[in-house]
Amino acid sequence: MNNETKKKIRLFVSSPLREGTELLLPEASSHYLCNVMRLQNGQTISCFNAVDGEFDCHIENIHKKQCRIKVEKKIRSPQPETDLWLLFAPVKKEQTDFIIEKATELGVSKIIPVITARTIVGSVRTERFAARAVEAAEQCGRISIPQIGAPLRLEEALNEWDSKRLLFFMDEKGNGVSCREAFGKAQSLSAAVLTGPEGGFSEEEANILYRKPFVRGVSLGPRILRAETAVVAALSVWQAVAGDWNPDEGEKK
Amino acid sequence: MNNETKKKIRLFVSSPLREGTELLLPEASSHYLCNVMRLQNGQTISCFNAVDGEFDCHIENIHKKQCRIKVEKKIRSPQPETDLWLLFAPVKKEQTDFIIEKATELGVSKIIPVITARTIVGSVRTERFAARAVEAAEQCGRISIPQIGAPLRLEEALNEWDSKRLLFFMDEKGNGVSCREAFGKAQSLSAAVLTGPEGGFSEEEANILYRKPFVRGVSLGPRILRAETAVVAALSVWQAVAGDWNPDEGEKK
Image (cartoon, rainbow over all chains, first blue to last red; front, side, top):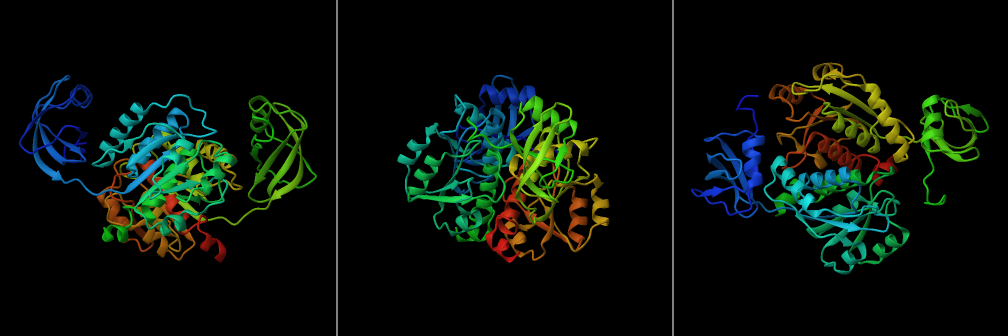
C-alpha cells in the first residue's frame, strides 16, 4: 500500500485539542505510534475527542515514552450522536470483547454490564472494556467513545432507571413485538437495548421486566440468536429504524 | 442443570427421517453423541433436515462409530424460509467462521464466497464453511442448512447473475441509500446481500456494480463497519424490514 491509499492513523486524545498548540502524548499512545506503527517525525496523524473534534496533527518528536505532536487544522467538529445505551449480560471473554467492539462501531453512547440470574461470568473488567471501546472508535471513524458504566445487578439497574428512557428488552422467548415495530413506535430519542446471557433471562426476570412501565419486550425473529448476535442485530435495526442510519431521523434533528 | 432446563440436543441428519424407522448415524455424529455429549441408551434427541422436518428420536444403541436411533414423533414440519443469499469477501479465518455462523443464525439460504480486488485470503475452504453452518443451524433451532456455493470472482458472480434477484451491495463509501429504505422498497422476495473485504471495494468494482440493473447500493450509516459487522448488520436489518422478523411479511405468505 502506498501513502495515498494507507488510512491515516486516528488517535483518541483525552486532553484538550486546540489548533496551533503542542501536546505530549501519554506513554501508551507514544509507544503505539513509535514502536507499533513505526511513524517518523514529520508524519501526520489525526487526533480526536468528543469535546473538541478531530484535528490533523504533525509529529514533532517521535519517542516511545513521550511523543510530541503539534495540533494543526481542525478537520471535524463534534457531532450530535444517538442517545442509545446497551445493557448486556457479560458472556465469555472473547464474545464480550466482541460485544464492546461492535457496540462502539454501531454508535452506542453508553455500555452497562448487567448481571442476571444466568450470567456465569465472575469478574467484569470494565477497564478492559474501556480500552477496547477506544480502539474500536479509532478504527471506525467515530469521534466519541462510549461511556462504560459500572456493572449492576439487573434489579439494581431497574430500580435506578430513569423512566424517560425506554428500555427495549430482547426477549428470546419470542413474547415481544417485532423489533421494527417496537423501535419504529418509539418517539423518545433516549433508549436502551437490554440483551441476556447464553440461556436467556429467567422467567422471574422476564416477569419483572414486563411489569416496568418503561420496558418494551422485543422479538428478534424465529431463530435462537447467540448473545453476541442479538447485540449486533438489535443495535443495527435500532440505527436503521430510529437512529443515525435513518435519513428521516437525521433531518428532524 | 437438571434435565428439565437442559436443552435437547439437535442433530442435522441428511438421510430421510420417517416416524417409526430406525437409523444408523454416521461416524462424526455418533462420536459427538457418544464421546462428546456422553448420551446413553434411552435418551431422546431431536433430528432434523429441511425435507422431512424435525423428529424426536430415541437412542437405541449408543456407539462411538455407529449409533442406532429410532425416529419417533414428528415435532416440526419443514417451513418456508426467506430466500436471501449472502455474497461475502472472505476475510481472516476467525472472522470468516463468524460470518458463516451469523449468516446461518440470521436465516440466509445460500452463502457464496466472492473474491474481490482487495480480498487477501488465499484458499477458501468451503467444506469448513459447510461444517460451521451445520453446527450453527443445530444451535439456533433452524431446520434447514444454508447452501454453500463455490467461490467466485466478483465479475463471474455478476456475469452469471439471474437479474430477477436483487443484489444489495453494501457500499462503505456511503453512496448508497439507507438500508431501511432500500430493503423496504424491494418488492422481490428473492434478494442477496453483498459485503466487501477489509478496505472495501475498489473504485472500479463500485462502478461496475452500480452499472448493473439488478444492483442497489446500500449505506450502513456514518461509521466504518468491519467486514463481519457489516454482514450481521445488513442481514439483521433485512430480516427486520423485509424478511421473517417482520410480521406483515409473514402474514402475506
